[in-house]
Amino acid sequence: MKNKILLVGGEPNSINSEIIYKCMKKISSKFKKKIYLISNYELIKKQFALLKFKEKLIKVKNPFEITKKNGLKIIDINLKFNDPFKVTTSETSKFIIKSLNYAHKHALNKDVIGLINCPINKRTLNKKEFGVTEYLAKKCKVDKNSEVMLIMNKKLAVCPITTHQDIKNVSKKVTSEAIIKKIKRINKWFILKKKKKPRIAILGLNPHNSEYTKNSEEIKIIIPTIKKLKNLKINLHGPFSSDTIFINDYKKFDVIIGMYHDQVLSPFKALFQYDAINMTLGLSYLRLSPDHGVASNLIKKNKASSESLQKCFDFFKNF
Image (cartoon, rainbow, N blue to C red; front, side):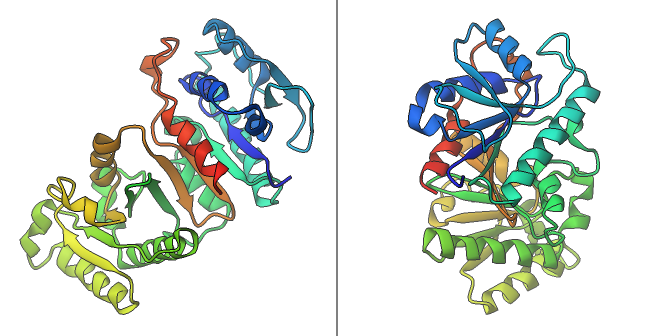
């Protein structure tokens, strides 16, 4: 069973069915047999029909079910809808929670290699958990502040210390404990999986690092924490100013640590666009997702890029 991959269909009101279809057309029939889509059978059937996509759909009960038929296997999750691209928020929320819980259960039991979740609108998930990273971390009982959102490709990885936080709350969430836990986890992962000790850069929180003024987060928290991590023989450099490091200096590092989401994700996406995957470190299993949102403005236009989802599948091929 360990060669199976669970693909959570995610947000119904999105480009997800489009990018799934495009990836199914690119991957080999042998690899397709490993993929089990967790979604609603009728939803995918009707969305594909509206998009004029032709793909054999096979309804299965669970990832243990083996079929000789060649097509997209769907584990059917209950969902009530009229328009397949205009599902109500309440129905979507229940559907997404059920889908994630189903994938989590089988991944936790080691029934599969891991899971990929397609983009999800954070508002329909759970107001308390903010995003899938935090939701699954709580399900896996990960130590507080130690789960890692790692956005990466073959050239660079970035990680925000705070993930799906409003800017007004960021400074309260930037703590020495969080920085230490996340950087130690990233360092360990690179050593185990990449067989290398990563060069890590860390950014300050404020513009120009507040010029290191007395009561700044750089002086009170970030710089003392860097010293502690260096004492652990972690190859850490900084703090750097976020307005300049992505011009050229980022090429000197394997990982760049930012204090908040857009501080590192915005420049990363400007540099690499869809050439990236989102990985959560700290879970009991491998979890990936495409590095973009639901793109509701592109629904039914057949213009969405499937590159990031394809990168997720490529990662599993080599895992």
